Length: 215
Image (cartoon, rainbow, N blue to C red; front, side):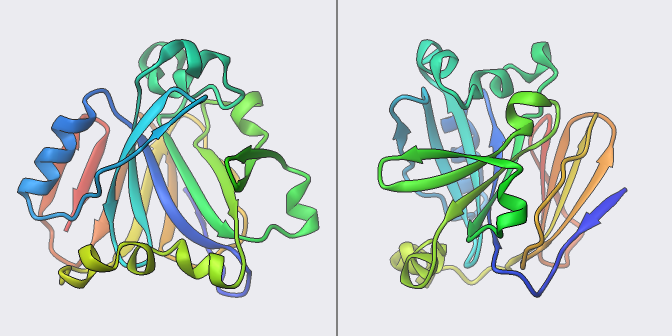
């Protein structure tokens, strides 16, 4: 079991990524259960579309491949993660916001998407069976705007639920995380599964065969 967290570094946990097959069906199920979802967006050049479940400080990004040709030609190769049952790649990812230190930066390569600078861990190419780890470069006001409570004010104003306080990831291989602030990420070896813990209740909602929300 691997648990990594630090309260002394510049990075913050921004969001958790989960590849799904039926994006709108899963999003509708979450909305029926009272979870705030945004309308989502597409990612030209990457071949994907998303919907996001929002907490005040983090979000869950549900991601589907909608253009397989684009996904196969993208350096991110999210088609491998979408096809995890056949490829063995992890369908999960962990995104951070902030600034990488020089030492950590050696483990990443720069992916520029529109105006965003996103640092992708080299494991995405070398060991895709590990969860995808990436850092969205942001500082000052840009860092604050990344938070759902700042970027989705109307939706979050109506949200009275608990915050995200735990992320449990299982898979054949664990990934190396940079020091960060935010909910504790626990990694174990086993079948692919992601459990997000929000609140202190024991009720578990199975969102998909590999995704559980505990609230």
